[in-house]
Image (spheres, rainbow, N blue to C red):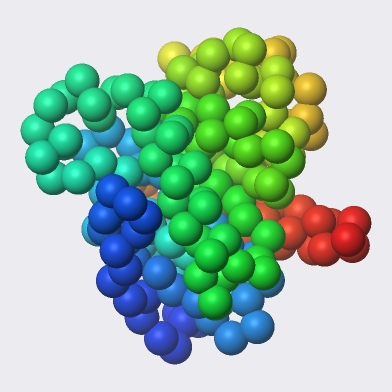
Length: 224
């Protein structure tokens, strides 16, 4: 069970990412098996307690993590930017390019963990990445925001995690699946609402996400 592993020994370090100087937190455990880049939802960021909780557990499972603010503080003041999925996807792609140039992460397979609107941004970025993204996990995400055309072009195996009480988002995820041709799975977390604030629900997210990333990162290395 991924959720019950001990926390990583070293804390993530602040990093300045790419030409836009985006603020991030990078954590790389010894012998990392892959890198998970987080795409946060609207109103959230690299300091999100929920996503940091997920990242802590993924690092304990041997995965590097990059939590990043996809907008600068000035850009966040304009609410239009917060919901600009193409803009967020472009920034996520830029962060990916940055990670592929860093000594500690350039050799690692890369995956995306998207939450809420970040799920749409992650899938749009993955669709444009020419197979470089090896796995995507969406937590309470809006994959529909990536658009039908982009969804049909996603190659990365995708796991959609939605709370059983988040009925509208369940329907949107079901619809998005119909447009996707990659390996895709929808898991409904019992008793969870959109933010997964209910006891134990986020640990279920961690377990499913960790298994998914480890599985497909390992598979990508066997392909080389």
